[in-house]
Length: 151
Image (cartoon, rainbow, N blue to C red; front, side, top):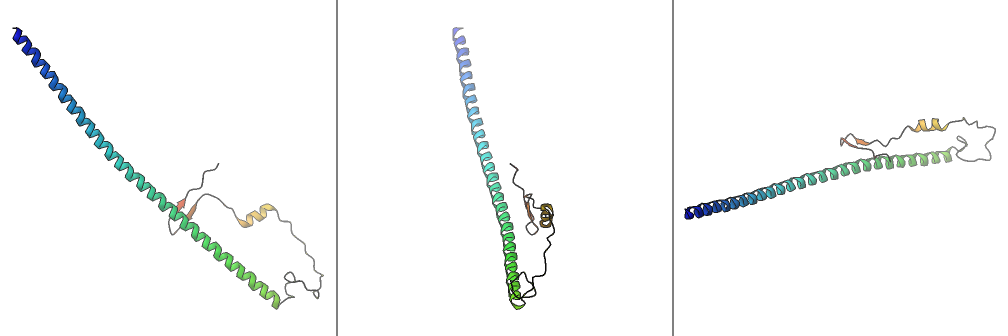
């Protein structure tokens, strides 16, 4: 009977050790699966971050292209305006009495007077149109850059 009692106790003890070993192996397996899942998530996150960085670079390039195109158009307009001014100056030397404001001539009679019309600041601003900082949009690129937040 004592032997049987020790045998049961020994058997029960072996059973617990086996359960502990199984539990430990299961814990290790869960940890390994969790680590593997974490590494997969990190890879996916890194791919998403890289993709977003590429999108940001593309947006920046499109925005820069739009700004470059606008700058070229402005420079072209300035060049054309300078050419018109040169042409007008050339005409003023050919026809000095046609436009008295272009060249002072002592022989030109000064019997005309100037009556300025009062123009309000609002009228001048209306002539220039309005300027908004809402976005830059180009038809060729189909890209709109949002305005900076108001501070």
